[in-house]
Image (cartoon, rainbow, N blue to C red):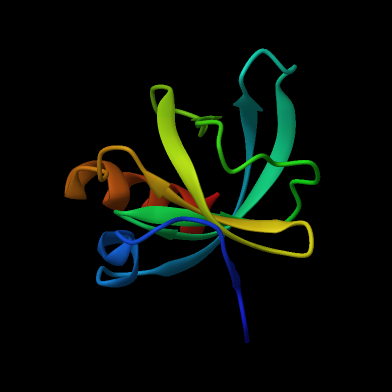
Length: 107
């Protein structure tokens, strides 16, 4: 699988941590654009993948609302078709990551 790199350097944080497959509906927004529903398909404490986010702009921060979690900020690291890989501005605390993982597995 090949990804089109968007960012310059960094980003190792998201790849070096535990990853889980999930299917979580969340809301995302860039800049002043309206909130959109998106499906989170992959999650680690350092980042995530969204299955479909057309017209995403790498130069704009991404805001994401995962159900039950406060508003988070991320940056887009790569794009493949309409899918995007993102890195959280601040990694998720392990307890938050485990809560999301448990919620996704049970619900």
